[in-house]
Length: 173
Image 1 (cartoon, rainbow, N blue to C red):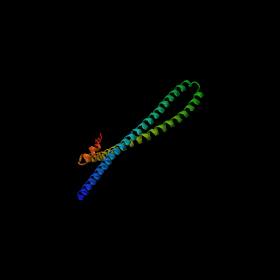
Image 2: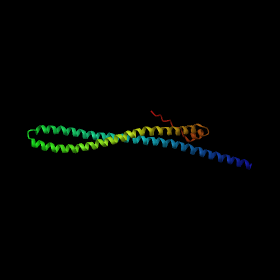
Image 3: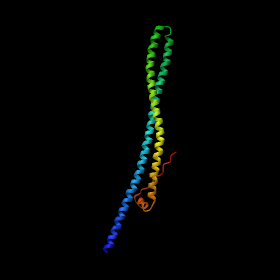
Image 4: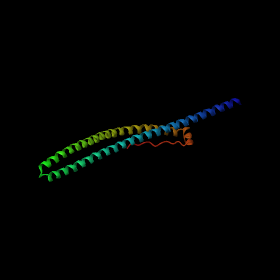
């Protein structure tokens, strides 16, 4: 009788340890999948931040361009009205040329900055495609492992008890 109790105790201990192992395994695989989803989210978020930086840079460059075009039109009109007095026109044009040079340098810096941002965004976009593809592949592998684990007996029984379900696969469009 004593040996039967010892055998039953060993069987119960093995069952409890197996259940604990199954639980830890399921939770680990589920967390692995969630971590991959979080990583993909961060990649996508960074991509959209870069696009917003590019849009802001291009808008600033366009504003400077519009201001310069308006200023040039005003200079032409003033030069026409000052045409009778050559000395006034020469001084005014020299002064405006200096302002134009400063504005042109500012516009060039804005466009260079926009170009740098554009290059960064293009590179980021290419990296984004690669990162999403790699992350999606890793996610799908981890989701497949979880799905297989959740569907195979006895883990399926334990997964149902713990309400752990598999995740859908990520489709790359």
